Image 1 (cartoon, rainbow, N blue to C red):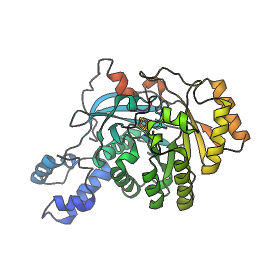
Image 2: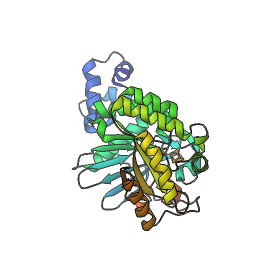
Image 3: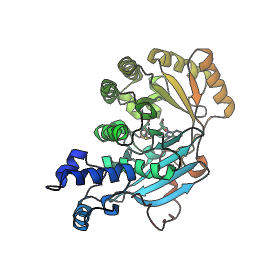
Image 4: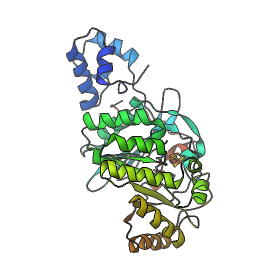
Amino acid sequence: MISPWSPTKEQLVELMGDQPRYRADQIWRGLYEQGRPPSELPNIPKKLKTALSTELTPSLLLKAKQENNDTVKWLWQLPDDEQIETVLMHYPKRSTVCVSSQAGCAMGCGFCATGQAGYDRNLTVGEIVEQLVVAREAAKPRRLSNVVFMGMGEPFANYPNVMATIDRLLTDFQIGARHITVSTIGLVPQMLMFAEERLQVGLAVSLHAANNDLRTELVPVNKRHPIEDIVAASQLFRERTGRRVSFEWAMIDGTNDSLNDAAELVKVAKKARAHVNLIPLNPTPGWPTKGSSKGRINAFVQHLHDAGVQATVRSNRGTDIDAACGQLRASQQSVPVTLSPSSPKSQ
Ligand code: SAH
Ligand code: SF4
């Protein structure tokens, strides 16, 4: 059984055998314009619906949902009982969804709730696209304007399915490339491939440290893909797309938030011609160190600005509803799960 949002249009046509082409078009419009699976579409013969439904069944089952004024967070259960999260954030001028690309993550970054829990598997195209369908529905009457691949998992470790999802976003959701951002821990071979795609899709690299000793401690995969290689790949991305990468930097108290750390970052960011996005560290159950204080963050950002490096501080949006990578799942494992009475309509 696969998600109706997994196949490409051509695969759907093939899957429908000798049905007339307009039926596939009808179902495709249902999936992407109305966000509905074939079983919920009017004007499709019952026999065809039944036949399709045995092959094409939505994957996301609602396990828990948390909401405040401007943020919605879903915890989904997949057919094999894996759990993933999706977060929708409303800002004055945009609505952004943060999607998961894997169940768990194999990269093992100690400060990250997803990394602490280990790796389960890659998500299918349908499992990623369904997150977008639900978020677009939930955003109404606002328009879902931005998509970030910053949920659970390492998107570049699931490269083909993430690229297929981006293709769907560009063509079927009509979200502009500049409104999409992929965040990677720095898988250099895929960064190079991504640069060669020559898309206008944004690329964020989670740097967190600008010397290899500290970075390897925080981000074990740095042993395989050290900072010099990330800088070279960032330069190539800039050449191929005309866009700067942005370096993500979780501010960890007493670990990577001194002025010396800022000075190291200035050198690397200038070489890579990157801008910098600082994120105050969110506390997670398995990591003892807390986020940096406001004072230290301000001093750090000031140092970057004075040295001519563009930097912004990301708000800790949704901390009160565990809206940081892997955290809803982590907290749901230690408290009883509130089962929602039904799944959303768009499933
Ligand atoms: N695997 C990808 C994308 C998912 S993580 C990556 O690492 O880039 C998205 C962002 O959240 C990354 O920049 C990651 O470093 C950051 N992050 C992970 N755990 C965090 C935490 N506890 N507090 C703040 N940011 C965190
Ligand atoms: Fe994986 Fe990103 Fe978390 Fe590292 S920070 S463990 S790469 S999800």
